[in-house]
Image (cartoon, rainbow, N blue to C red; front, side, top):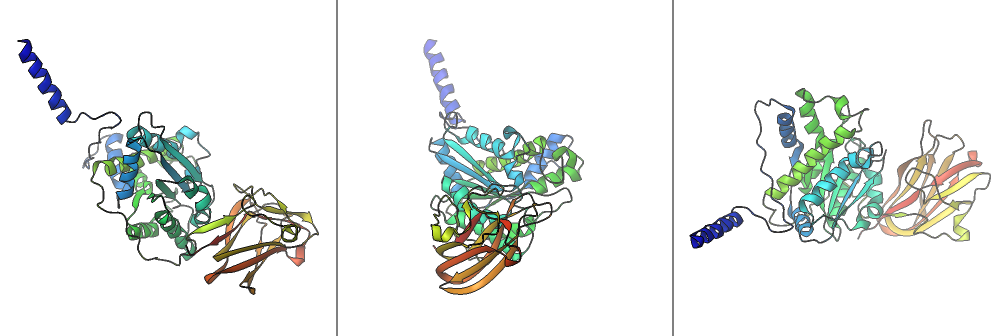
Length: 414
């Protein structure tokens, strides 16, 4: 009798292993969601909203590699770049979609307690794709990311430079040495405003993953399952419940990517859709660019622009010796603050390329209601890499003024 029981126990154990028992450190995969034709509850509507939000699974080759790394106990870095929705500074950290989705990933795919999975929030309020592309190297790529989320659908307009900046973020990430997976996240405003339509076209071109929480919450609101006031306390920023809903969409995407087979091969990077003026961008700040007594002019180190403390400042005085930057690059930019203080004047930018004055630009830094938001300005697009010399001064019409340079940007070919 004991022998029979022993045989039965062994058979049961074998059957259990074959039918889905998982080894240590491996989590069970989620079941697929089915569309509910006649939803009866909020959970039913949320089920359909999740399905609606998944715009494109895209090529999952890199994402599946990141998941496998996490399961194996290797370090996996997740970076998020975007505007105030991603920064989430009106919420407690645990309420933000960034923190919620990071926690889900590390619990689902991380080894043990998931401490091998790290995240970096590079969301800056009031900024769009152009500035995002310029600071990508410092704020995202420096963290050696395996996964990068990009959220700018309510910060970008529809002009060519916005599209160029957005594509440049995707392309620079895909070409980076760590080969991160790129996931596009699309938001909307209370009035429905969003630049997701043209962003979806770029996402399709690169075959990257796309999640539209705009489409997901629109489905919920159109069907009376949620109001805008339940999602947001203002015109665009998600509240705590909103952060939870966005996380539901992203976590569903993770489940689907995990459940389905990986793409057989990596993304083949296509031809540029736009000019590529922001691809491979770099920033000069006081942390990595040392001025001499001759080149610093009437300026001192440090700035007070939002999220940019490492620039240079000309204090309110009649001194107006130029500050000079020299570097090798292709495209050149300056980042300045939009100041609400009327002591701020006009920044004059004289741009020399290969010893020739190619452009002079004047930028008024004062703006009524300004709050020192960082504004990128294109200075010059060269046909090829060359030697830049850029001199910044105050306008002769108003020399006694305040000015700041938050950073100087440029691109390189490689």
